[in-house]
Amino acid sequence: MDNHLYTVAQLRAIERAAYAQLEPGALMRRAGEAAAKFALELLGAKRDLPVLLLAGPGNNGGDALEMAAVLAGAGVDATVLHLPGQRESTEEAASAHERARGGTVGFIDMLPPEAQWGLVVDGLFGIGLTRPIEGEYRELVAALDALRCPILALDVPSGLDADTGAVIGPDGIAVRATHTITFLGDKPGLHTADGRDHAGQVRVEALGVAPELFPAPAARLGSADSFAHRLEPRRQNTHKGSFGDVAIVGGAHGMAGAPVLAARGALFAGAGRTFVAMIDPGPAYDSVQPEIMFRLAEEFDFDGRTLAIGPGMGGSATAMRLLAKALDGDSPLVIDADALTLIGASPDLLARLAQRAGPAVLTPHPLEAARLLGTTAPLVQADRLAAARELAARAKATVILKGSGSVIAHPDGALLINPTGNAGLATAGSGDVLAGICAALLAQGWPAWEAAAGSCWIHGTAADLLVAHGVGPIGMTASELPAAARAVLNLLVAEKAA
Image (cartoon, rainbow, N blue to C red):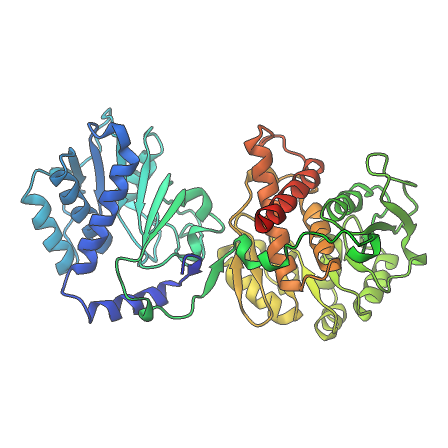
């Protein structure tokens, strides 16, 4: 269950089932105890500093009040901020308030202007919030940005949609936590879209609820375990033909860089031979990686090769013909960039994609996904999981919806959220490298779902590795990713073999 992600509706059902087995208030007390234990870890040697707990009117506020009572009992200077006139909206929260009042917990009704805190706890609103945060609560959330201390969110940062990862409301606001302790089960929204900026490091606390009360998860959080069985050391008795051919189809006039980056991604991810099939005559070779072979796309034989089609492809009639040829063939496909735009503008091409027998992985960013779905990028971003699932069903292909917390969708509805990567990937060409890595894995015999999951994880971990070595995130370039991806892939293989 470590990687399982549950929707709000599922969590409500789990909660109801648990309530039927436990005495009233038990889950809230357990949440308060677990959160207090985590808070003490975060405070470390700074336990002499006071802790501020923001308690809202509902059960999320009740969790904060229970936590305050536990912290005070452990000798911590705990102060609860209740806005003027606020009353608890549930009996459990009211009981928690009484327990906190009965100890040494302090209470205030406004944020002190210059107080120093060892930790601030967000217990304003939980997963039940459906409206934007407004009024005094909005002012309070905005004021937290000026505090220079860790911020721990209870269950979900207030103002964040736990299902989608979007900040609630077009002009909404949400708490930016450094850490989140989330109760019962993990939530998709903590790991995609705005969630990664607002949730910080996430810890899951099941509160002792029996595993049999949990249904099949709505999605899973990706890990190397999802493709680990593909990570086998290479046999000595092999040759370049053992690891497949990858051809990058693209490179219209003035756009040779995109297919070259994709080709480098494929080369460094282990493809036996790598080609660039150029739409317009371009470079004769890559001076940095002369192993990559260049051909004219219209003269190139697609058969027997894994194709990554779209990088720098443009929208010419030639590009359209080549895409139709690729869709009508049975070669494994990674469909990226301009190829996605062409399919989005042509119901015929989309139908060909949905009818083909060979494996295909689509790698759209939100705008490309919006074109394919006939909607807008903001609506795609408002519910990334739903958009990826719908696109995979329409295309009958595996989809990687790129972005913070890339969503991988299977045609049968299965969802995976990739947890690796950082802001350094927000640079031109990084998606081309991802397409190349994915094509290389397909060429080496990985099924589409595992190639999508593996390429996302390796690509993101490559970016994390670069940052760990002082390269980025600011100024990281796509051309730095292939070698880092190679290092990650070889490390994974070595770790498995050890």
